[in-house]
Image 1 (tube, rainbow, N blue to C red):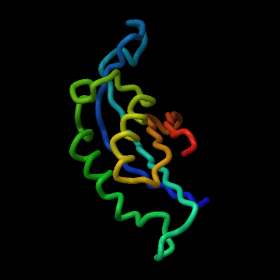
Image 2 (image 1 turned 180 degrees about the vertical axis):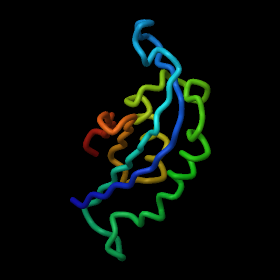
Image 3 (image 1 turned 90 degrees about the vertical axis):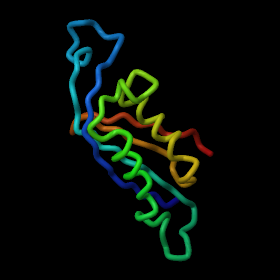
Image 4 (image 1 turned 180 degrees about the horizontal axis):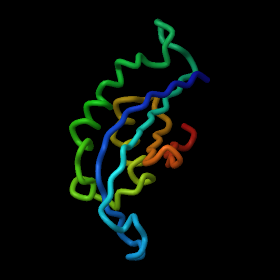
Length: 120
């Protein structure tokens, strides 16, 4: 199995609902997010790629247009945790990127949430 990944970044704010008032994430705050898309394939294409990294330009365009410098509570239909965002982004991109098997969303250098599809 061949695997590749590519990182994308954006900055945004959010408020996490359902936490105690004393929890810092229950207040307005922001992150410099890193989104990593993970692709895999059993065979390489005729060029020798799992997928040409330039074919992932739609991921950057979506992130720049829909998420960057936004208040996530205003645009996402769920409580914008990193876990929920990873699943959401997987669902957004999977139809156009069949090699996609996982999405990571990192809010800080020390924290990462991963959504990985069940084996297909």
